[in-house]
Structures are given as structure tokens and as C-alpha cells.
Length: 321
Image (cartoon, rainbow, N blue to C red; front, side):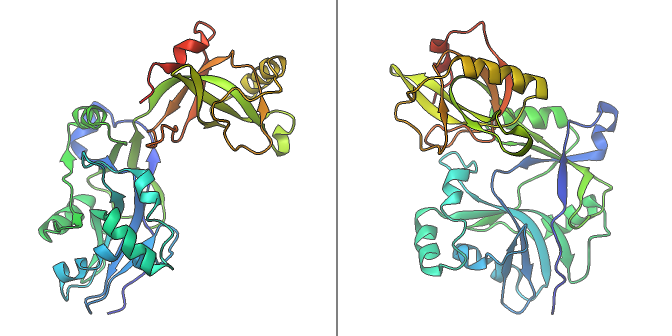
């Protein structure tokens, strides 16, 4: 049969529901992967579509046998493609090596052998008929009844109630965060809904500012991002670029400090390939929030929190991996 194209429902950033409403919500682990809608028309074929709608089926050949698990049952499933690390957690850096290979099937097959993908399923929007108007609780029951747990796919459990404990569990296990889903909510295709709330576990790091990149547009003449590093074995190691988190006044104040600390030489060892960078003496220590680190130690999704005038640059090595 011809299946309807369904855009994935999106979660809104937020916090845990009030304690009194806790039993009305389910909690799922927030995965660090690539969102995918899976189309299984029941004719032996399968199509994987990214959040953008792009057909990415050929990039993940190891997921094609999923069609055998459902046979002739037409279905549209929602999930996340991951590449797992040694502890069974999503590793986005490893996944990046798999993304973008939809038009290179030979390379995708080689990568599949080296860094196999895993599909984690968390919703069903069509199962012989449209299910988007059903509640989350009923859709979840339909999904779990399918028993989709195989060599390259699984259906992770969802916890009803106990939101505080669920969130703490993700923190204890170094996971990206939590998604809270209201039990009575329908599936809203393409909508960023308050019925789904995502909470990202953010870490904190002390970093040394070693340079900055110029802003554009209204930020012309001001720092668009600061280039930061941490001390390691007597050198300042570059760990990323931070371009969010300031108020307008904070950005202006930081611009004055960076101008006063200007330097002709790069303080990072080795120097990062940042076009148009302005270097500064490594004197200013700041605190940033970030989600995870890459295997190379780079900060993912960093945002500025505050200056730390109480810390010396040598103190920035505290949380290096």
C-alpha cells in the first residue's frame, strides 16, 4: 500500500512536569543520534527518511532486514539512528562517519561493517491504519506489541511517572538527557509540541579564552564566538568555539577585555584552523556549559555561562578527559 508521508513530531526544551502531574507523563531516554521515520509498506521494501524528508535508506544497509520483522504489516515508525560506544551509548562522532552516505552505497556498506548503526524505535504513527490521533499511551502499547527487538534495532522502555528518578538515571549513566511525553497526547506531525518536553543534561567546564572570531551583521566589530582551550601537559589545547549564551551587555564587556588582551601569536598548541581568528593572551578564564565531548575532546553544543575572574588559567585542566 502507499503510506502517508508523516513529518516527525518535535519536542520543546523545558523542565520536568510538576510533581502533581508526574503520573500523567512517560519518560524516555533522549538519544544522541539521527532522527528517522521508517516506512514499511508491507511489500518487502523499507524507506528511511531523515527529519528533513531526505531518503537516507542506502546509508544504513544493516537496518534493511527490519522489513522481515513486520512482514506484510504496513507501518510507519518513529525512531533514532545511533552508533553505539562500548557502553551501549550513542556516540555522535561515530555516527557522523555514517551520515551523508545515502548516495554512496559502497562506502555505506564498508562503514556498516566498521561502525554498525542501531535503530531505537519509540513511536508508531501508522499500523495498517492511521494512529496519529490515538494517545501516546495507546500508540506505545501498539509499538511494544510488535516486539521489535533485533540485531540492529530495539524498542527501549519508557517509564511512566518517576520523572526525577528517570532524569537522574540519565545523568548517572552519562546519557544526553530525557524526553517527557504526556500520556494523553496525540502525534502532531511536524509540530514542536509542549506535549513532548526534552531535557538535555549539560556539563560545565572551565576554559581559557585564546582567541575570537568576528561576528557578522549586527555583531560586526564584536566577537561572534570565542575560541577556548584547556591546559594539558603544559600546553593550551583547543577544545572548541563558543558563540552563544551572552546578553548584549555581556558581549560588549567581553569585547573590551578581548581587545585589551590582543596578541599577534596563537596561544593554542597546535593552532586550530579557524579562518579570520583574532588571538589573545590566554589570561581570561570562563565557564561554559556543553552536552558531551567528541573522542578528540572537543566540546559539543557549548554555550557561554560566565567569566571566572577567581580562577587562574592553569585551573582549566580540571575536567579534561
